Image (cartoon, rainbow, N blue to C red; front, side):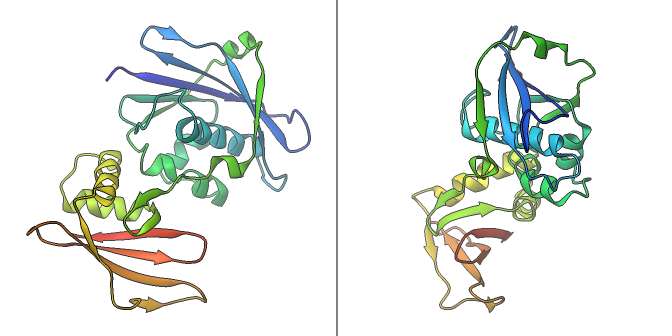
Length: 235
């Protein structure tokens, strides 16, 4: 697979109230697309909102558009960014809660992506096109469609699966676990009752994934009315 480079650069000053502009272009091999822009709505409570705006723009581009390719992981992907906070988020070194929560995609599916902080962003002057406006709700992590409903994979679950199956990278483990959960050849054995009741309307359940005569793979799911998360894998 040839290298794809997604370049982004965020303006530090808002273009309007709580809106920050992020420029981007994509390089596939020797060619590059024209410069485009996204205006991202960010809450004014953020200390440095332009950094979150850049992260949300990257998330939107990778998960909700085809600019950098379809159904890809971080393999053969390089992100050239204007803020070192993006790289810190991928490495789990950020103390900003919003950056961490919105950067989970960089810690799992795109963990293998190379992130570099660009010294030059003069390419943004080539921008002449239209601007797309997005909000944080336009950048939500799409869930995995599984036998047990829509589910989000946590980094902990992917790490455990990566270790137990001796897979070479986190995002490769993410892809393999996602396929395992969606494969029609698996039968899912639902627990008779929730493993543990926690907060109101929140339950923790253990499920067994069974295929033919192979040993079962147990997964632990935390479920509430809004979202279900796969929190660990026991192989």
